Length: 359
Ligand code: PMP
Image 1: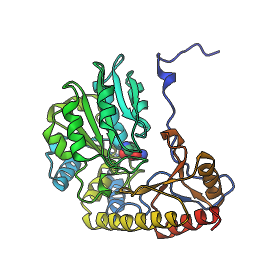
Image 2 (image 1 turned 135 degrees about the vertical axis):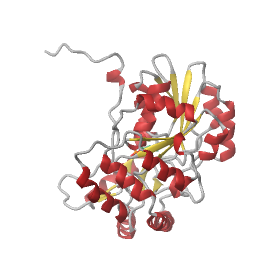
Image 3 (image 1 turned 60 degrees about the vertical axis):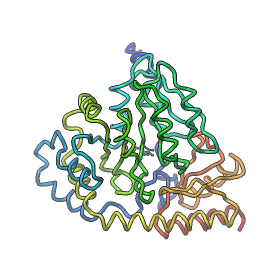
């Protein structure tokens, strides 16, 4: 019998439940469960990955200067205030590890990203879930839940899986209402899908306790490469770099992300196809009695009469080789989250849900 026990609290950490990618007995599936880019990465990123093979015997850059400069140039930011991580997951983890520990509280919202409580516990801190209102982040509820022990507040904007936005005015109210020793993290994983949205960079410049996180996994189609970044005050970036491993990003991942960020034309193509198809998808679903909030991301939160109907629909979609995401774990048991795929995928999912609804 193994007598080795893990550290206190480790077994309280939930195992992350990712989007399914196959169905037992179904050979060909269309995966719409992880908000991936159906068009894949920029061809320039693929070329950069191939080119990087010649240098695989070399260690990658430790300071990511070239990628940080490329990101900074694209977004008009200071590269010294950017940190890169293995997906934005790792950047979020740096924040929790560096700023929260045993006895501290970390706030996240009811339908917020499921990694927040996981990384809070990984840091030994206590996650505190705050209710939303009609699938929207409620700033008053957050402020009412802040205690002397609150160190971090995580807000996903736009929300996943809700696809709702928190207004700038509300975010300013939150930043102003938080104590000086509490960080506010704006997770902008889906920011690029919102026309003209800066992901919260302006708020980072206004408030020294605000951090923005972004990813290459969504609109840039590089989920498999694992690259994300954060933007914050120089002092915060300096702290986060101390809990970052020196070679956290592979040479290949750095090359792919840098090429992707430079391909404006491909980015615009992905943004506009997504914007067109997400409207079509929700309009078609509405015609068969499946409601959704207007999406500003690359997924639609389809709402059903109740949990039974949502699960029955999900089971039926699987028989048709369509994988979407159940979101009961996000306190949305009546809903299914459907990634906006390419036109073929959108047509398939609409046809299958129409058939499920008896249309
Ligand atoms: N934040 C949100 C809201 C997400 O949905 C995701 C991906 N599911 C992430 C962060 C993490 O993404 P990545 O680590 O791939 O950058």
